[in-house]
Image (cartoon, rainbow, N blue to C red; front, side, top):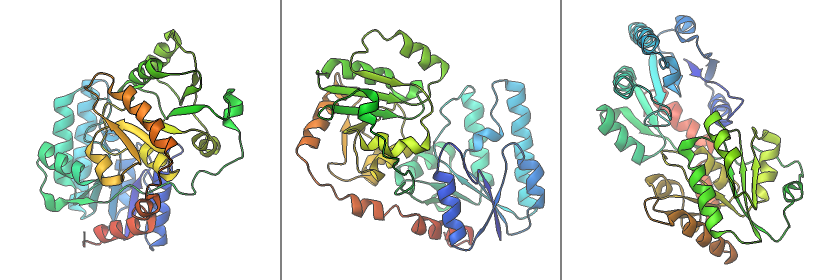
Length: 343
């Protein structure tokens, strides 16, 4: 049995590399299914092989509706070919829908069709499982919950003094937003909330590459006092020192299913502020997250203030217990069982 993984690795996210390496440790041969070459490469797959895809929308989405339809047709023909060849299709559903959806009805149709072709569907939480079952008419027996693994030891410290680099004193309180800056991640709300509660010794760092819309917004923000805008892709070698230098990570996302950024913060044992959602209950324990209701006035700003109080009380959440549940070796064994039909 071979596993054809799309993607096998990623320069932007260690998730795929960690998954691939852990599966290889379990004795599974993982082949790289390159972007845009699904139809060409799966011709080499044999009966009993697995095609495991993560972000399926890349295979059919397009801004042009005619191209969207053509790509969708090609994907359906490819899935039919796999079925005839008795090659099993596995899809990890990271999000109920992609972050950018132009043709919602077509998107729902395609995701429903793909679910029917898949032998198994992997999701990272029970809450996502329930949503997939309801939205795409999927039987519970086809869905397997496999948690997102941790990032322990992945990002190495280079000994950078990030506070000094940003001109922030050692006794200051720092909030951090880290990652791609897009509208759905709530950065506008974050800036407004911070400006409402900031003091002379509190800072907000927004670090990550912004899309064109958000870059234009950030340039015209008037009140930037104590706000550090590091608008670039943060290299992997800087991530550990940046996260280690702050007090609280804030993730005011408007949509959350599973958050790799939150698991990254968890891996560094950082207190997190985020909207109340089912994902928190399945991955975190008390004093690891300060949650808020985004529909409440001042909900985010109040949560940010509360987070500093929790931090100052120096509570000791059970991080080791939680991180043990997210070990990649256990995740790989569970996925191997799914591949072999035991899932």
